[in-house]
Amino acid sequence: MKSFCKLILCSFLIGYVLMGVSGCQGNLNQNKDVSKIVSLLIDKKAFPSPPPPPPPGLSDSLFQVKSDSIMNSIDMDKWKNQKLIVVVDTLLEPLSSRVNVSLEQYDELIENLNMLLQTQSINIGDILEPRGVEIRSVSTDLDGRVDYRSIDMYLSISNIAFNKNKTSAALVYGESRGRLNGYASIVILKKIKGQWVIVVSKMLEIS
Image 1 (spheres, rainbow, N blue to C red):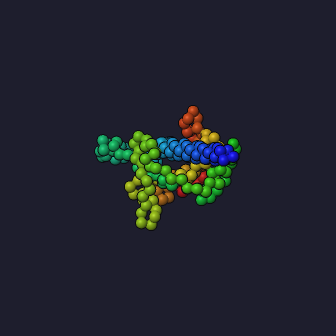
Image 2: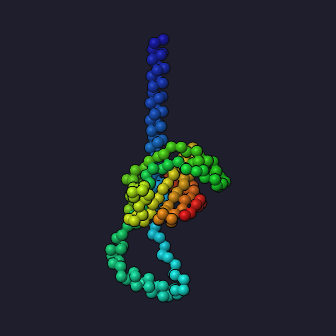
Image 3: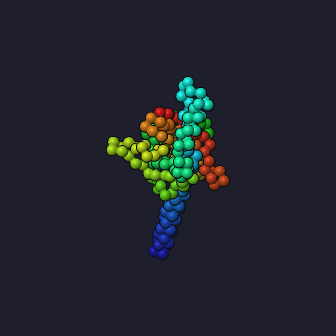
C-alpha cells in the first residue's frame, strides 16, 4: 500500500514538474513572438516624415529651387550618418478603453485584446534595429511628458492578444512625432511560415 502511494505521489510530482516546464516554454515562446512583433512594427513604421507641401502661392519650381538651396547648404556626408531616433515604451499595457471596431473574422481576437488586464514588459535589447534606426527607451521631461526635442518618433504598443495556437495576434499601435502629431491604430497580424505579417491596420484616432 505504501509503495502504491509513493508511486502515485511520484507520478503527481513528475506531472507537476512537466506542466511547469511546459508553461515556462510557452511563456518563452510568447515572449519571442512579442519581440518579433515589436521589431516588425518598428521596421514597417519607422521612417522620416515626408517633406511639407509648397506654401500657398509658391510655384512648384520656385519651391524646388529653395529646397535645393537648403539641401546644398547641408553637410550631406554628416546627414547620411544620422539615424532616426525611435523611442519605444517598454511597458505593453492593457487598453485604457475598449476597441469598438468590427473586422469580421478577427472580432474574437479583438475581444481577447479588450479583455487583457495584465501589463507585459519587453527588453529593448530584444528588439531588432532596422538599418538607419536607433531605438531608445522612454525619456520624459519634468512634467512626465515625452521629450520630443531629441527624438524623431515615440511608439507605444498595447499588450498583445494571441489566438489559442499563437498564429494570430491583435494590438493597438500608437505613433507620435510631437505632442499634437500622432495617431493610434488597431493592428492584426498573422504568422505565415514562421514569420509575423501585418494583415490589417485600421486607424482608431488621430491628433
